[in-house]
Length: 211
Ligand code: GRF
Image (cartoon, rainbow, N blue to C red; front, side):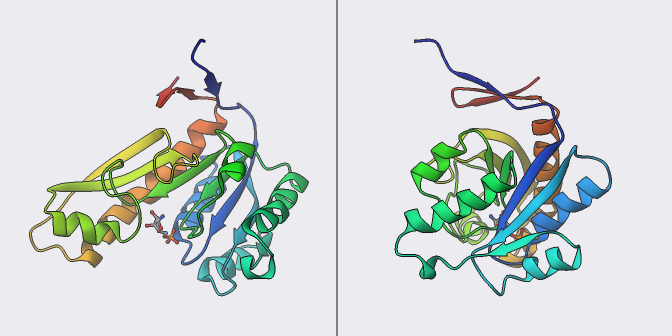
């Protein structure tokens, strides 16, 4: 069987950003859209946390927001069904996970195959999971960074779109390293979404090519 090839669509896209907290990556994406750097609009900012500061920012920016509490649903499946309904209603083309702290089911990932991105504050496949800046520091790596990747059911392991490298300094704390990485996150996430809607991302197996 030949390798399946996916090419991202060239169009003015509709993006849903999923957050659970601060929302600085969401803000960076929105800023890039407002600056005309990305051919897209944010159709929805979704949060599974009512108090997520990013939700408030989205409201202040007059973006459509939605909060759903997974505890109000009998199962993850029912919770995600509701989210999918809201996404389909708005013809969402791309979901950007931006500090969304709930793992998506494999059926959700399959429903939006090749159309979910995530930003991770380490150089995957090193340091998947949580508290990765601290883990990188403790491990003693000399470089860390950020990764934008497509989301598959295998958490933090989907095809890598862009990475940015930052040095780890001897006097770094978790905070200083996180700040250095975050600045890069904001740049590469916007860049990845720009390329997506310029029809320039091609996925072949595990590899993402920029056309
Ligand atoms: C970022 O470090 C991102 O890489 C990780 O969660 C954090 C979210 O930060 N997935 P913010 O909410 O975008 O400010």
